[in-house]
Image (cartoon, rainbow over all chains, first blue to last red; front, side):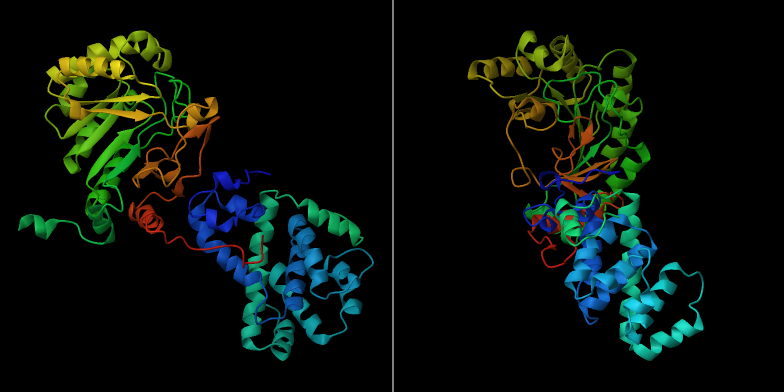
Length: 187
Length: 284
């Protein structure tokens, strides 16, 4: 890691409540270096990524796909088990991870899933305005509030992708064990 | 009537008046020092990272502190008088709020003494000098060679030149007999009993690494705002250094300017209104 993950005993006063009496994970434990940002940033990030009006499964499509597009090893590995737990199949998870010999189109026959993935790909990797056909797909399959939330989830994931990659956050042992048990390689 | 019209108001002023927050704002002027005391909270010494506050920055924060309702300024280090311009900076601070500066007492001679006297004599400034034992061997074992001699010659010199001096004794095991000897000394220099404080070693910095001193957490330490180059901390015992790394357990915020930012967080913490838990956030 590029910076220390602060242990609970070293946690600043505003950060201590986020430790919950144990190891809060490397995102919290590094953000704790700037407690005033942790205090407002973590609840926002948590709310953006946690289950909400958008189904849990869709949220995990967003998080895993965005993380794969931005090549965030920490987020891909951390969210592969979560994506499986959300109801996505192994084939779908492999396709979202951009693994060789996988296809989004064949793994995701549902048009609304494919519309979501097209939106993710455009928001996460595009430059400038979103292409009109992708806009059309999104407005066909999603309500306004769903488009807003999809977009916020993508952009918050991008924030974490670059944060975790830049600071070289380590993947937890239990996550690595779960990946191995599910037949996934460490990214 | 004038005081009523100009007295600061607002939550910080009220908290200071009610004793919820301490009235003094501490400024860690610098971390380097000509001594390397065995129990130093900040691992200070000649070659450490200086972490030095800019003089104008200190003045700006003092103005803000006064406007918010804080009532005094404390300057500590390191040895503040290692910074050449410190006498004039302290004089400027004292024009804003009553100021106390903590010193090891070993630099009060020659041109530097003259500069200090010229800047601070007659000002609302106390210089608090450390003296840990009534004899050279016991004192210098902890504080450094010749420190006892330096302090014993410096304090009467300062008092005679019109400077207000306090003495701080930091100790684990001061006997009543040794305390009596210390008091005989400071009375002979013209420093009254009310200006002599005896306090325990706190188990942070070098003391913590050596396993000496008393443990002190947020519940044990006064709610005094302390500003450093590394952020704002809870009490002057907060921004301690261990193995060269600044402790963070008493960090309030990295933002120190304007002073209202950490002051309001500290007030919230002091009132027990800490927000947030990650237990329900799902991103651990």
